[in-house]
Length: 606
Ligand code: G6P
Image (cartoon, rainbow, N blue to C red; front, side, top):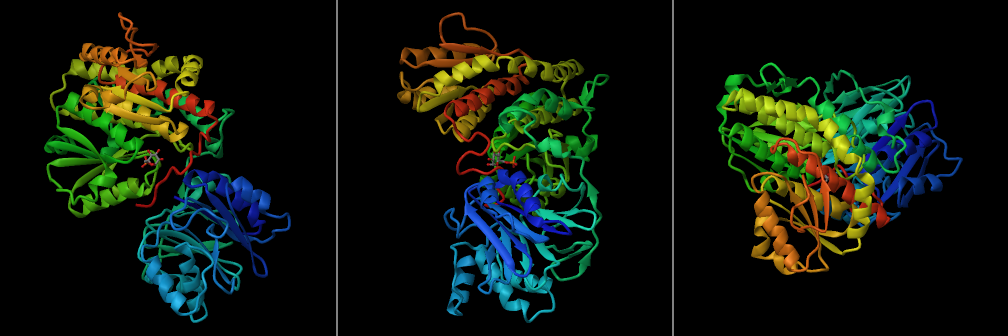
């Protein structure tokens, strides 16, 4: 959470910092601030969005070096005072920070006992004061920062400037990402390449424990002990246009609409018509290693976890290997037994969700074999795992995940096909899945054509304060993801339940005031699902059914029919109408679709 950006070079820093912050707003957007250096530090910070900050920055806010921040509050409410940057009492040092200083209370008490007066409630302000205390005794800002960080327990990505050294920025990373951008006689740093691609494609990712000094003419990186590290710049293949709304009203609608193309990209070059297998070179696993594990354990957070549930079912069905998914945030705290016969799969769109990363690190420490399904190339999780599958879905900007969700499910179908064909999945079944996967992009296109109708349905159902979502076996993770999408962007309460469990409790909630969205694929459980619909309607509940055909009896008030694929792959298609339903409900209720309240896209704190 929180986005940070830094610039040093010949140009005016403020417009570059503001533009960068706008690109990072998905990381947090409750307050924002910038500081530039020119004969002293000039600071502006406000509660609100980057657009509010831009209005508050005066025309004469000149300086060719500066740092900026967009915040997702952890320590202290969103307010002008708690917004970053934070300055030392003498206004010499300014700091922006992403992460959490866990021993902030203790550090703050020590500083206060020494007479330091704090202006904010944040953990970050302690850093500004600590650096200011050592900067005079040390020969460089870099050394002062390193010394201050020695007392810090927690995670950080930070950028620091010193009014007395107007030509350099110091950045450091431990658990929260920092990427350096190398320009022509100018240097940038940010939490994500999104803030850099307008200016440069040459980047360097800092590792945990690393620190860098940026000057207009270049950079130096150092390990935590102070020894210089050698870093090779990478060229990122993302274009600035990938971060635009492309003419759509919202990023979310753009990303939903992109799915025929993004699913095609996840599949590209990976389907083999001859042996009916999947080519997944990035797994770094030969056939013998692929046969050697007996279980698959999938971990991820939020929508990544729900796509993992779809993945677990695909692996069980196609490869007959026991598989299950668990929230990474739960897994890492329960001292998990790490089994040598289990393959662990970590899922993350951003590749930087802290709970997922920490779970991967715990697994690796215990000798577990971990692969990743990740969208962001070169991200922390991608670098930590032993191999994996990149989604190639392109940048996902809207906070609610859509195209990364479907691409993850597709990546799991490829993985399940791969495992299945090494085990007992027949060539005929392999062909069935290969052909089914190849059909997905066109079928998604078909579903998207129903957008207008789904908008009408969304307007109708968005008038209710609460919705039940049900699904059975393959349909259950789809229902969970559908409920998640609705609540996160429309703020309508939604609860997802296995259809089979409805009668064991939540049926008591059903009545005219609470409609049900039912995921009803045309599979071997169709009759069971239709019975559930009957039970709901008998209790006066309205039903919106997502399925493959109108039920014969009048068991649903409304039906969204999606094209049929293979039963194992149907969950991927059944998800799409639920994304559109949530989107149009959020628009009807005039919500901030791309930046829902209280949330952030990259949760880089525990
Ligand atoms: C946050 C986002 C969710 C996302 C989850 C996992 O909670 O709001 O939309 O699913 O993080 O993110 P990841 O980048 O690890 O897939």
